[in-house]
Image 1 (tube, one colour):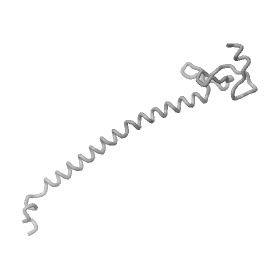
Image 2 (cartoon, rainbow, N blue to C red; image 1 turned 135 degrees about the vertical axis):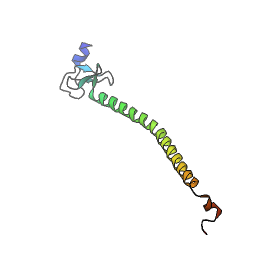
Image 3 (cartoon, helix red, strand yellow; image 1 turned 135 degrees about the horizontal axis):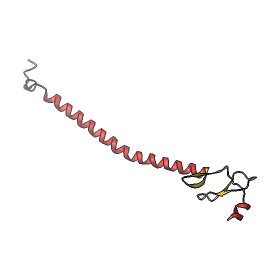
Image 4 (cartoon, one colour; image 1 turned 180 degrees about the vertical axis):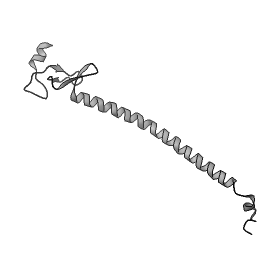
Length: 103
């Protein structure tokens, strides 16, 4: 493998000799273009795509929960409004229904 690295150049800097190969995209990179993340060597573009996909996964999980929370809150709001409306109707005096209140 040392001979393979010695014969290749960086994918981003063609004038520099490669020092490592990204295990994800299989491209060769120089020491400035490769970085270590979570104990693995990776290039900046693969690291960026990995972080974007993890952020996207978090957003998707958040949006999966959000409709259920919104539905529960809407149901609670409707229940409270109907309860308050019923309490208001229950507080109406009986004379109102007899028609004697208007006389």
